[in-house]
Image (cartoon, rainbow, N blue to C red; front, side, top):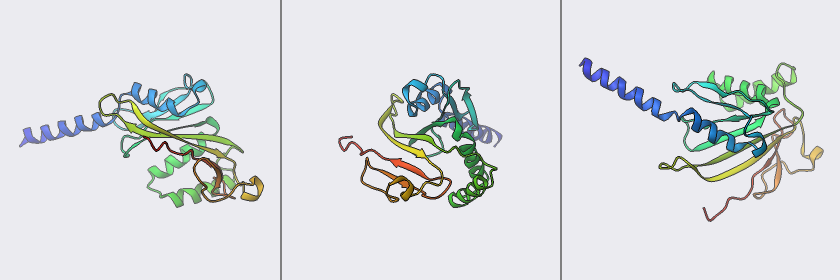
Length: 192
């Protein structure tokens, strides 16, 4: 019985560690979301061998890249200006406490209004999704969307629609809130 328990624990440990990609792969893929000129010196957050959220590489510029979350289906990475880091870190902290989207939204809205949470007057976020080739581990069918945060902006103040438009057209999401942002979602290549 002890042998079976040991083998089961060993299998679980090996299976868990295999789910976390090597640090170098996390770094090389995470930087794909950043503009090319910022990749070499961007700060990278990702996962250690136990699945803990850690800094994989310190940065020397204004960009932060997030590695793919191996616990989530699909491949998704992001990069943002470092002035957004407090805001993003607070969201991760609240998610780790078990809070759902709307509760996180409301808490951060209150904290930004109260001056407890710093939200820059403008900042950018880039999200890249794709498929991991199981053999080469390369990212295939990459797809990028862009987010430009401009807190408390409205349709009237920007001249943008506040509901989704055809792909490639800008629109304002979460208008009038701390999380107001311009969304630009390019059309997907139908040939992929």
